[in-house]
Image (cartoon, helix red, strand yellow):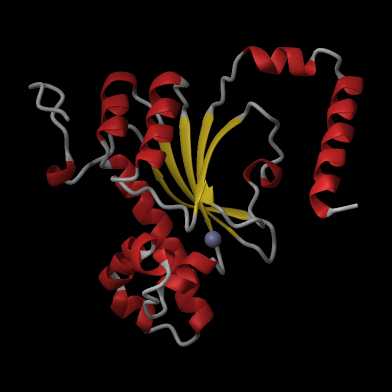
Length: 217
Ligand SMILES: [Zn+2]
């Protein structure tokens, strides 16, 4: 059996198992989704969102990309964010990165002109490194430098979320969602919170939208 055929076979078994345990399972789930969480995670195959938090289908709306980035010109991520916040009305957004992240490692290396990932997609992480260069370079081991940048990148993505008009509008009008930055340990399977930003928390004035005078964008 080919590897992809095994996936199709496993799917049949999973579907049958679910139906056996709860005959209405798929009928109920197919009506609507009402997830409470938006998860912005890394594409790394070792960090599957639902599995590591033991969640079921329908519980988490998910966007994953290399090194869990929230890039304000990325229409893919922005579309997911707007749909999650304004249509699904999620209560929490979790940015989840992980130690030993290949994307962060690549960002800390020199550029390869042939690879879009290193000289375009990871450019924002290189900027975060530049802001914290002294702290990161002071760490003796490569692994420590990578892992510190993993943490700083997660915190940075949470701040970028707070700088979007989508989040600021939701905070102003609906007092949600709460923004979380979590880091996952590949070696122990544990999540650790790094930062939490609540609706209405302080925003640097240059990133602040003014919803009182109608000058929001
Ligand atoms: Zn990663």
